[in-house]
Length: 315
Image (cartoon, rainbow, N blue to C red; front, top):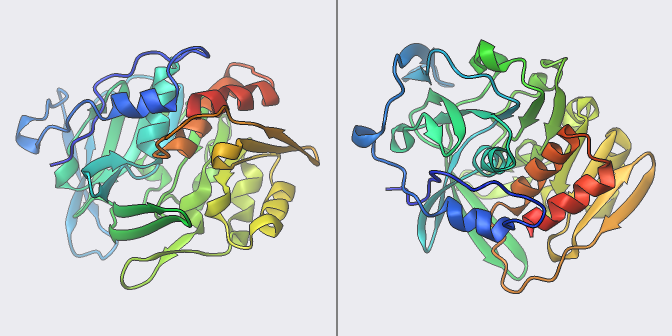
């Protein structure tokens, strides 16, 4: 049974809850087992074929969906740690943060039967039924995070996006296991596009050990975005890769943990220091930063002000 599923997060203001508060509230509620899940009226099931073409799946959708401002696409994950199983992934943390900041949010994802949901707090969920939920084990060490993938849900394409949500002001592509079709970067021509492309830079071996792969094949998608947020650990080749990605993006932010964030724009780099925090939980920090940054830009915030705001929220 998964422990965390937020029922609601209070609105976040500049002087309001920080990332630790968001994560804490995120873990205060439980995902209901399938038999107890509150079903949205007029739920419908559409046949869909899995990647192998052998196991039937379904798209779980509610008719009609409400209009949204912020669309996030990516897997909600099942994260395993010594403390138990928690729900995670960019779609979860970024979606909840954007909703906490007052945006109407919808998430397109793919889930196994162990994570049946149509709402997550104030975030509407459109889920493609999969044989299994994307599952990670995470171990944080002084040398960094060691991560393994032990299950993966289905790929996500434009056809999975409800028509009502295709006119969202912001579209946030947040792959965690190379599940988001890169063609989606050019599919929402009227929207501002935000990317957290870490999942496009990942592959794994037969045992599920995650490894970093070259970012260059995703250059067209990065170039199409209004803003891209990554962390130093998302890329191979370190500073050389960061420089090349910055050259490819109109606006790049690189988060660097306790050191803060770097903002690359118009050929310049500026540093945003992070406030000192003792014993901060790193869970979801980059995803919370990204959603806060995109939300601030959505409201007309100047780039550096948006980055400072996001740094405070994510710390």
